[in-house]
Length: 313
Image (tube, rainbow, N blue to C red):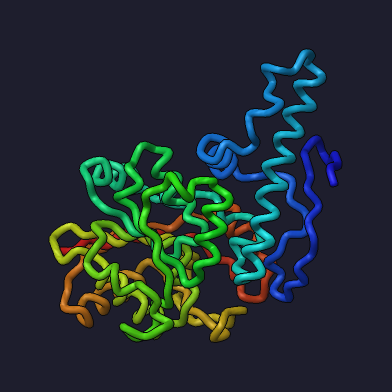
């Protein structure tokens, strides 16, 4: 259904009945970077009915609204499919297609390394939007890797981005916390020592401290054992006290870091993997993701986004 509300195109979507409050019933806007990626990379909407073929300004406006509606409709259809696989907040709130790597202050350094031939692994890649964003930025897709717990997300990415036969990136699926060589592990063991750079966006913060440590150690095993190998993360954090919080996650809780605790965390990761890492990071307050989640029981006034980069010494 197409309706007009505050001069925005609105797509009315079906309710998924999620008890965690992470499904937005009506969406009337797409984040600019996500919209740009869909239009430039995926060519959504199609070239049919472009403004060049419209005979009047009124028809041009109608065509523009129709194109915006088509983008929203396409995105919501894929969102609903993904939400039935796993009801992550980023999916229910339609944030999953916004590339987060460009939000990290070291993004320019990442691009420089990739243009020199470095490999990048998107850990917990979901639809693979970070990979497509890098391809659109001119990075050869053969240098890019991604993995997720659910192959269904990766397949939905191919559907949405329309590049199953053209994209040369390497995708893997499996449980990062599963023991090596087990069925649940999938084919993740093939990633051993493959990545110059790992990007983990909204990944580590889904676990409690013990599982987070286990996951981080696995990420270390995916990096090349050389000076300068890098792991970059971006996740929910706090400017206050680091602590365990009750959350609607699989184990019912997760650990929310501040900068100091995250720095100590990577010292411990190094000790337990016989590696050493140089840490840098920062906090970002007032982002839309934080604003959208301030009414939950697990929110707190100091909640913010935390980014970090650790480089192998």
